Length: 69
Image 1 (tube, rainbow, N blue to C red):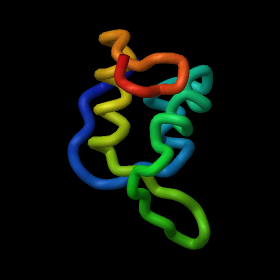
Image 2: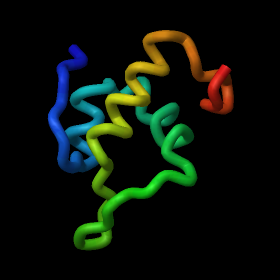
Image 3: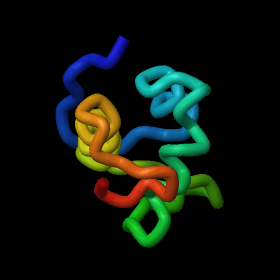
Image 4: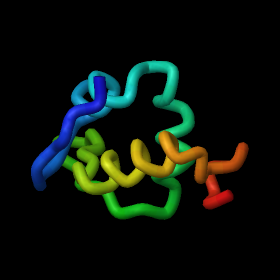
């Protein structure tokens, strides 16, 4: 399900396709305070932030508040 991504930006639909809808809320919490792009009033996320989230999630390194455990 989670494939390697190369540079660039991802919109919400693209992120959900990679992380799954069940992880969207966790991802939103994880992204608080992070830099995102805004295009036509919609957020675009850096692919490396998505990859970092996936890595931390898979290793169990996020707590309930999505801080590093």
